Length: 393
Ligand code: PMP
Ligand code: GLN
Image (cartoon, protein in one colour):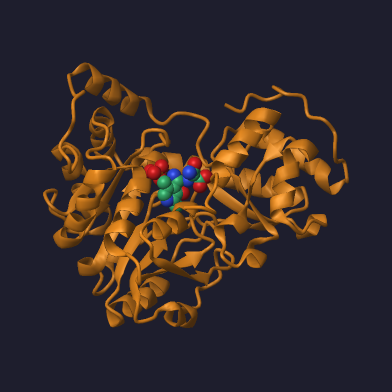
């Protein structure tokens, strides 16, 4: 793993902590999710659910996940054998890639890509091939996807809604990808952690629901993003029993089982009325609008996201060219932390002029960040920012 070093999230979170800057880097909400879900967690802790749960996850949660996939997407899954609870989506991604792609195998994914994809492909000794994505509303280039597939390709790894671009793949795009997966007999692994966080009526569609895909797709999600509890790390992976079984074999030796009490709380959360997640998504949409408007008025080029916690901003209109350099100095120049998008690209030149801001923050935090960033275009750099002006925790 030489070369992987410290993740950009840890580096930027540390920069925020040291400088007292507003942290719009790592994607986590600065307010907790619904209180009834917290109460369910407290109840679970007080009800003796404190020893190892079953390796697959508690049946209440596996049933709730299967019911959720059926109600939302019409997917038919058996809670026994076709659903596996994991320690966040992160473990599901790792276990799936380790199970399915080894040395001499290739994995195709889009770039920019979530950072753990490259690391987990490398852990398995496999090779990644990437296909570039543009702005959220720019259609994917299927010919480039086809060109990235070779006889060694085993897995197509898809993230929709997509971090960091905020793109939600359309049905036509998914069908094109599905056709390639079927034609080349690929297994699809889909990361859908932002499945409920879409905006302006954009509908998230799982790749597993498209023709020919149910039997060759592992679908991953997590409670962290949906309910604003990113620190809980309760995730899951669903799909055909033989594929889930392969993932389970690896999972046993990564974590053995995942933490128990919060599984009860997430089972309760999945049984809540849809309005709970719809309300969170609507609130996030308003925050997206707030930050996008602020970034535009501060002079950034804004690529408006269709979902997720994130907006990608182009720094070139501000006269800057290198996102990494921009983000390393931003705490000093503006008292704000962002993430340079180039770290999510193999083609770093393509990502160089972009930075990612998270908008899953309280309105007053977004407003303060925007006010600070507004000074950038005016050349108002280097003004020391007083620590503690706004609480960023
Ligand atoms: N995939 C994507 C695209 C993400 O943004 C994140 C961030 N949390 C994860 C996976 C990891 O999810 P979890 O915290 O549930 O492990
Ligand atoms: N998914 C979040 C993000 O993209 C958090 C990632 C992390 O901390 N590893 O910011």
